[in-house]
Image 1 (cartoon, rainbow, N blue to C red):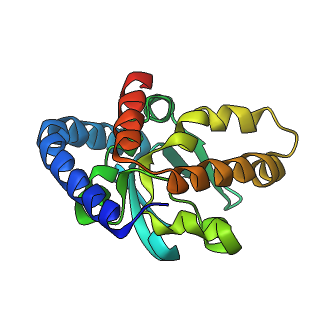
Image 2 (tube, helix red, strand yellow):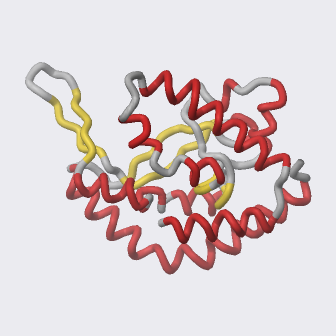
Image 3 (cartoon, rainbow, N blue to C red):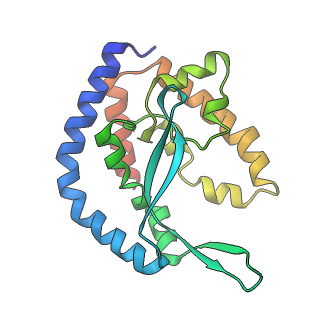
Length: 196
């Protein structure tokens, strides 16, 4: 089980790494935001509330990949643009989460931050997942890096996600917290970099 000391070391590591990486990636992030703004006709940064450490809500930031169009009948149609597909496939849409790491509501490694209705509903021993901050990457993230494509092939994507993928993610994330080590974080960061 991860200890308070390990959590402190994890936070220090996150701060050091983000301070090193952010200046290098700042210009590419700004370029992607500008392109996404032009591509979607809306400001290129998208924010959404997610469930964080101890079940507390926080705002996550991503580069916008959806274009919204209002039809004559008045309903809102959302579709992923071609540039948006590229951002999602390469995970470049996640780069603004470096800001989340900097301000301390995310870590480089941990369970992915979920929408309400998932992590906030955890019960019993499963709630140990909420001890750590959500991560930009992690074991479950790597396993389900093509999650959208997997769900597209299902007859009932929501049911499949809740009964198969989510259940598996909980097991993976519990194992991460129970067997945490600094070396494990370094390994997962390296794997994530190589998989990009």
